[in-house]
Amino acid sequence: MSGDFSPDQKRYLEGFVSGLGASRLARTAAPARSEPVGPDAIHLKAQDRTVAAGGKLNEQEKIKRDEHPFDAYPRLVAQAHGNAAPKPADNFRWRYYGIFYVAPTQSSYMCRMRIPNGILKHWQFAGVADIAEQFAGGYAHVTTRANLQIREIEPKNAINVIEGLQDLGLCSRGSGADNIRNVTGTPTAGIDPQELLDTRPHAREWHFHILNDRALYGLPRKFNVAFDGAGRIPVLEDTNDIAFQAVEVGEGHGVEAGVYYRLALGGITGHKDLARDTGVILRPEQATWIADAIVRVFIEHGDRTNRNKARLKYVLDAWGFEKFLKAVEEKLGFALTRVPAEAVSPRPVFDRSAHLGVHSQKQAGLNWVGVALKLGHLSPAQIRGLAKLAQDFGDGDIRLTVWQNLLLSGIADADVAEVAAAITALGLATEASAIRTGLVACTGATGCRFAGAHTKEDADTIAAWCEQHVALDTPINIHLTGCHHSCAQHYIGDIGLIGARVPVNDDGDTVDGYHVHVGGGFGPDGAMARELYRDVKAEDAPRTIERVLKSYLANRTDTSETFVGFAGRYDTDAIRRMAESVE
Image (cartoon, rainbow, N blue to C red; front, side, top):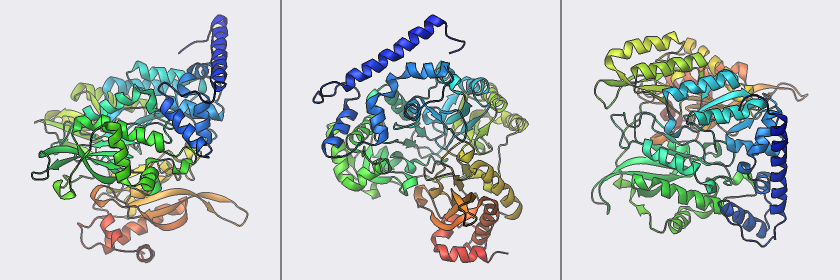
């Protein structure tokens, strides 16, 4: 959308929006006993059952029931024309289109996209730079869901961004609010020498299944799905509500030997839970239909009253896995296949630094090159430069990772040095220190009203300090998240920091700070980090992390012991004593 509306267009739009309001009132006035029909019926019936059982719908459920966000697009257009900020109810509704009004931190929208498996084409990537430069703050971030987001979008440009992404063959639909979020998958899918499955077709099928079925919007709460093809780079699929994990099943277990997806459910690290193995395996081509059935059971039985208990984990906790899987089977119309744990071969090992640097692909003579970003930040010039490299030297793909960086794939052996030099010329790099390799941070208080600290800025400060004062010889995962939503997944970091307002006097004054956790992990090392320190001022965080890292180096069994292995051998009191004894 560009330019101003004519007077006739303004009158038409005002009348159209008014008509939508009258239609909504008419629906509200319909007989209470009428049976809901259409794609929203599954949600309306779930709400009705909640109320009939004596429950009270939470505010977001009332907003969805009053007017479905996808019925309100003309009002979003009208607000954009008037450069008007949304009222709270519409701020929730517009998240269905992938835009979040983030006042008071910024008087503007943030837009989050949908990029299945985190892979997009070079021309789409360059197009995002154009949108960010013309209609937003002139930068983009790679997120912890292998996604892109742009910020500082004035209300008048909301439609320009939404429709501009659609012009590129991208979209932002359903990337926020109570919907199924961006579908993640192995970033080296199709090119990884050790992968068991190429996750791209399965992530893509699920992506389009979601986009084209309105019944899959308006869940009790947000929902995450990930596909791990057993490649070298971790996908963190066990932090998702549904985790499809590629596994190899051997002979003699009642099923044909071969490669399947194993089904794990209930990951939500902000609530201290990783997805748990169900014992179910499935053929890869079944993934979309099984995911669909799982989501529909959740739609019908998730909590519509208490949003703090509205995730899939809490249905599983209340029902147990067998009852839940039985309900899924009833939806599917067939029994799920189960095998014992010993039927599944161990997963090929992760390489915690394979998202950076040059690595040989399964295609002879070709490589992927992992590009180190500064906590996910990219300027338009950097985006265009990387897109040009992908076009000229690679296979044209840009592969985003959950580690807030990206890969260029299909780079010929003979071109690696030239590509690496060009990346350096863009102000980026193909290598990073052991600290920065695993450094992750959410937007923080700079752009999020929930955050208790400026996580990206503090992460950079912590890394700069520790690079000078700690001689690390192995990658360490340090995750900084601004609030309890845990977008940066602090509970699975070797060291995890969650933003907090730290009291500085008896008058109620506070400063930025953190609670510090240690010992988190994922995959075979899956564990929830434990609190080590409370109320550490942001200015004291670098020295605090330095002491923790030095205590690890001084007390590990040998150089092969990981931080999570070290932390698992001691309680937090012992780790504190070690850290406090560091000179």
